Length: 273
Image (cartoon, rainbow, N blue to C red; front, side, top):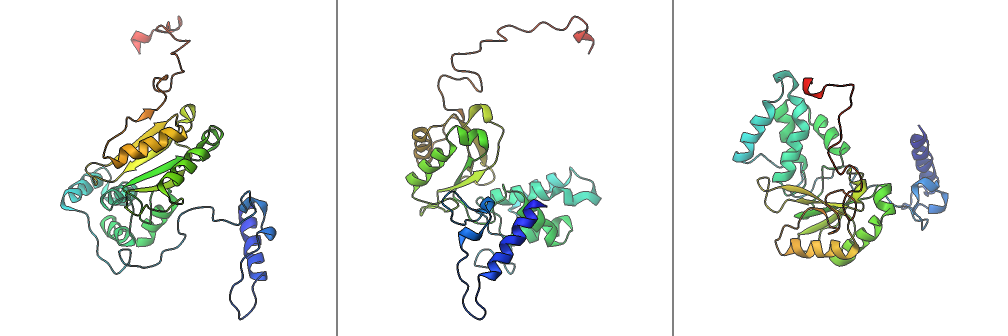
């Protein structure tokens, strides 16, 4: 309810700052609630995603799109996991497969094709694709780098990691490099708080057959630039923690507790389980 009130207030202020019959004037950041301003007081969108679809070449409802012959077989396998009257439950895995096939993003014609396959109105697929941030509706790089922006990673330096990436690649968030190889986005918590800060690399360079989604953890600005250089050379950097003193999510120097197999509770016969 509070977010609804903030949005209503922002719209009311926006309308109040326009002059009838003239061009729209910029919305002064000073009259916006602090919740939708950044630290510099400048209004910015809360997401890098476009809120509405606009037809353009390669992303138009007038274009045709279909799964490749190999992925058509995978579509049938996916649909076989659901009862015939619940085919719409396959919308998420089908969108994921379409994104892998289409180089990391989903055009509107692919959503329409999925709607035909599962027998629903296209809006039902649009609702799913626009709700989940892992579905990209605009082109991304062959290597889509997603920086975790949640509190633990932020406290451990994720903003410095992102700044190092953007500076090295010469792009802004959501922008693709001129060679089409890299783009940088933000993702919320990906469950590696103990290895913060971290990024995910979604690799679309080999199509759906060679698609990978790897975590790189315990990063520094220097190390994240080295990862980009390795990817540019066609290498696959070792995923997981980038701290040589750690094993997976264990502490530096090794474990200090649970050094032996824990004894089972005396009140329970584990062999009988």
